Image (cartoon, rainbow, N blue to C red; front, side, top):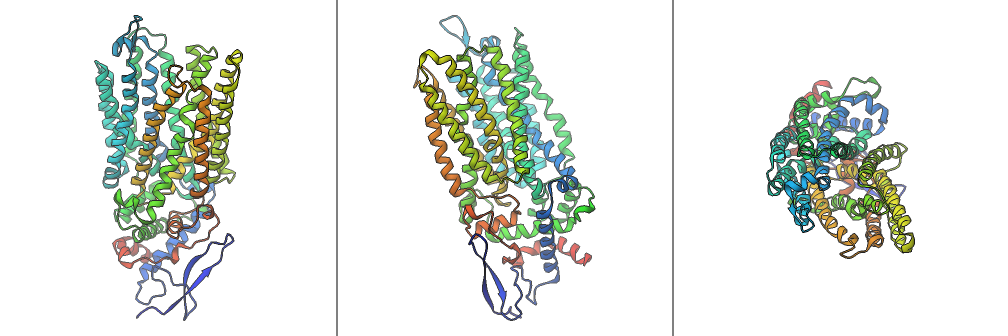
Length: 575
């Protein structure tokens, strides 16, 4: 029998934003998109909807402590997979620091007229950007591989590649071979960059999502800290092992990580997207612990995943890279891409030259490495500080926006320090280097850390891997441009802007503030399904946080639900 005629009801909200729902004109009941209220709609489908509704309500009311008690295994597995980024941070920190090693320069450099061996600038640029080129290739490959084979198998395969390619680093007879190693290793590194964030966002509830996704940024800092520590320990060596030992230590990562990840559960969201709802339930049980306080029900949570996936299939017809630029997903792709690109556009490349200014102020080379160790430690502390701010209830959008405001202000201060008279140049350089350290800490408290949570939450589940791939690639491309421009800005033999570079990046950062204010929404406390509907309804970014939405009043084609018969049967048995 056909459904009764419906009339539209407008739901008023405190911010003036209105979302339409349908009301049954005959009975006065709400007509769920999934077909509740339709006599032909099966009992199983209704059970799925009600179970999904219950799971969503439990997730949104879950406190941080409850989430930790219920999902301790998910936290552990997410942290283990994120450790792949520690390995990458370590690897990437090596090459740029080897240029200070005479043994490295003698092996891979050329003899200059002054009688010293140096790696030519063209090869330094090639080695620095070679890994980035490989990462771009790896990122695009990841968009296909991880969605087909799953996150777990993809990471394990990449660990095998890293172990193999490390041998090229260790035995490289010339600089050309080193470049090949950088490009080849960049491929699995690129895959790690996105798969860690995606896995973290999919194995934990709303209460933990912001913490586990931003933990990835901590892993970057930890890897760089270890790398600088190893370099510092090698400064006293005068043989080829000064650079071979750091390269050889790369082998300490793949085997233990491979063994651990072999036992890791697959993302239940990925399993649901593959139509394996029962396997998703088993994975979910492996990610959780018995906790009566939260009244957790694995079937309800899987039902929520099924409902969200069905909702996204209605909104997004395909799951290719091209679909990232269609309809509603175009806006999501643009926001996620810009969110990651702004990390480089906010002056990050300029702040990395803090040791350069401190050396101008009289800091020795050895002390520079000690200072770098301290700076990377500050970066890690900044992640914990960001967690504290999020625990206080400050949203991701607020942290990102106000963080940019603080960074912009400091960049202009750095620019004005360029007006310091030449007679006080040493003091000016010391102040510049010190402010750059404060800039780096503030960056990690806000933009540098919160970015990982935003990119993990704002893309749809179906297109997340591909959206994050596009975003990270834009980040890499912008990074290459900024890394090329910044040395020219600072080099006395080139543009020689010195501190005035702060005015340039301050202006760019101000434009980023304007973009963020009008385009970046607040995802805190939202389920993935709610974010899907808010984007579909084209709600303004500034009104995301206050707009009320009931995703269970959104229409979903019953045919989409048919592929999940297994989980439906499981629910019917419990009723």
